Length: 123
Length: 499
Figure (cartoon, one colour):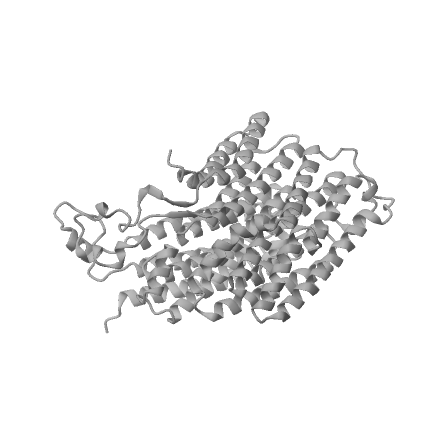
């Protein structure tokens, strides 16, 4: 049985997103929550990459021996890949800030339990 | 110089200044000078900038400059690609001018108050304030929905930073909660954006609308509905509408007063910017307007009723601010030109009034270091002039004439009646009364009841800069209340274009 690779990628991206949301909302350990958020971000990135996939397409770099017409018909759409690159940077920055906050709160409370740290604190 | 470059300068200047301030650790005098100069320039730039568009990299649509299309195959020149925007585009109109001017004004007074109240102003704190302002200006200006997402994330980080820098008890916990939720809302918003990209092949809002209106895409496709739901989720987070109202009001309460004044302005203008995009893209679907009105009603009811039971005045203001967002949403959701104008006018008014209240009530924190209303009292005798200004700010929020929110709330009620929804008008009137009662209860407790014996009032005098800020906010409230057409004339062009 031949499985469509784009379909499988969409399925994987969807799974990562669902697992990520579940972990971020329902797991108590803050590090597990952060891993869940990383899953969520990666799932979205995979979704974007999969969306930009073009069967039989070529990399969107215009080489001297190509004609414009042939390039326009065969090159993959570059925009999704540019978006992924930007989102990776954003994701890394926000995860760094979250990890920094968790380090401070872990020192202060001596725990990584979200229930213990966040319960009735910020409200 | 091409004057349209000033459109980009509205974003680039605060970012450049922020990055420079971040490097000036312990150089107090230099930080003060640069921060004040930037803050003065911020509200001036939108007034000098002509309306129009700015194309980053000079990439105008091929249709606007056919010489660029020379040599391109008919595959491109003969299709809708000829019309599309090739790069990031910022659009500047009279409505955006007003909103960015008000944002700049609030930033100026937040910086002005911060510089004068702090003995050693922090360059990092000023960096965060300017980065937030730059991000929200970009969100307002951008016609590129992915560019909007990038600044949405930067704004969220700047807001978290402002909370962390406050040094208020439990601020780290609140910041963590906010950023954790942001890291769920952000990727989901992006997912909505890329679904739109997948369906329309674009991230430029004008081009997406072109694709939808010209039948290149089926507007009734379920993927579009999913994209709408995901974008609305991101919008709720950025604005602080339910279910994010609790965390948003907690964020306001864990920032310093000038920080809270700025944070609420970020929320208001982000709500308007993303709300406008939602209406532009999805107004063909009646479900969009129903959803916006429903969410806004819940925000009004939850925000204002939860404010009643709070004992910390910063939380009271936080919840009232969230409740007032509901009025803006009702205006947008009504979908008529008059309703949208009223909603946008309410947004401008709310940003000014809430900043006025946060900085005004902030004087209590400055004099007592206490924000719990149960421990306060008799503050009227400490500084009656400031007390009077705070009272006027509260009356403005409740919609008492001749102050500005009276005009916008009256317009909202008229718009709801014109749209055949008088029930909304009745609810808005009732909730304005509840807002008035909630504010008066807090005002009485803090200012008018006898001073508790254990309350210590510090000797430090309230800086003149803070009082000047409050007086200017009052002047803005009175001006917009007596001459609402100053704002509505600017806003109605945008509103008419959305219908």
